[in-house]
Image (cartoon, rainbow, N blue to C red; front, side, top):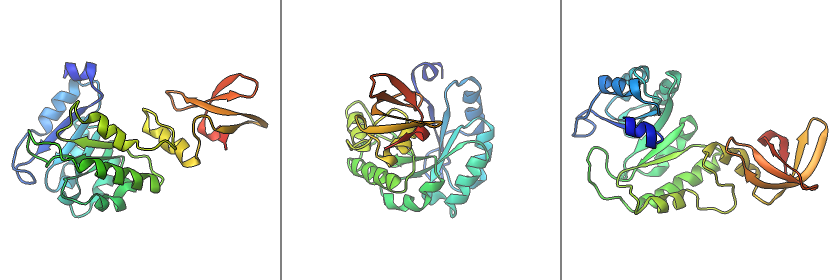
Length: 239
């Protein structure tokens, strides 16, 4: 736990019930114990049947992110709503044999998506190469719906394929690329690209310039025609 606190972005906890997947892992007491000393978010991946019966309890013991498998419940949208009502981020998961298109009707209710690049419940599996195209297809639909939804990939990911996964996720030169997914929706949908001419509207003043960079907190760095620069918010920019 201390190592993850220092070097990683989150804890990914696999919860297995021996029913949805053959293996068993751990439950509420272990998650609660980790949460008591964790400094990074707990991302709980439920590989269980009837997740609707357990999501609120997992949120109560410290899960900040909770995902479940699309085919583990009859009403995934209701489970997503229940997770959000509990104060956690809600995610959907599918195994490699489930069409990625099955996620499309539910995207608007998701805070993130987890694509399995191996089959859930077993360690040591080889990364499934079709995952790259599944990432591209999912990302394209997320953008088509005008949503901002991070995509997680789980299974067989290593230093040998991580770069290719990132490339699949960001395979475009028409949009601003940033470490913060939230910026994608704020700027990409309005066709603001680096180097593009923009107008900055503040109060009753309009100034012309060009977009030159992204601020880490989500602002757009604009260079005005007089050579000065300023960080502006999405709502202050027009193209």
